[in-house]
Length: 152
Image (cartoon, rainbow, N blue to C red; front, side):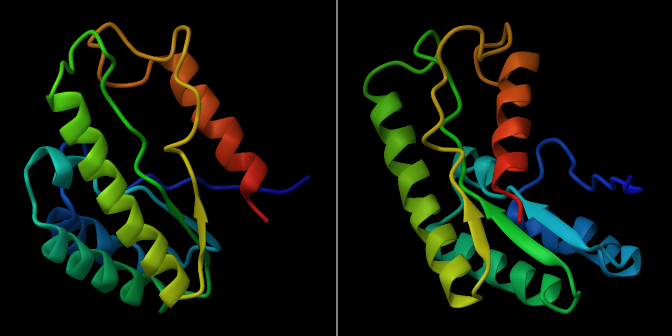
C-alpha cells in the first residue's frame, strides 16, 4: 500500500499570473513526485490575451521542471451549460477554450510532458452544479476518475 499526500495549491478565481505569483513559490519546497496543472479557465473569463497566457504557462512549466516530478498539463474543460451560456457567447467561449488548449498542447509537447484532455469529456446528466457553470460532485468525480486513468 502506497502512502500518498495530496497538496492542493489551487485558489478559486486565480489566473495564470496569480499562479506564478502566489502558488508556484509553494511547489518546490513540497518536493512533489507528481504534479497536475489545470490553468487557464480564469484567464479566459478575465480576457487575458493568448500571448500573456502562453508566457505565464511557459514560466510555470519551466519552474515546475525544476522538480523531479512527473508533470501532467490538463486541457481546459468547456465550462458553462447551455442554460447560462447563450448564443453567440457559447461559440466565443468554445473558440477561446480551444485556442488556450492549443497553447497547452504546444507547451506540453515543447517541454515533453503529458497532457490530459478534459475538454472532450461528455458533460451530460448531472455534470453541472446548480450554478450551471462549475461541475457538481458527479462532474468532479468524472474528472478525477478520468485523470487517474491517464496517470502513468
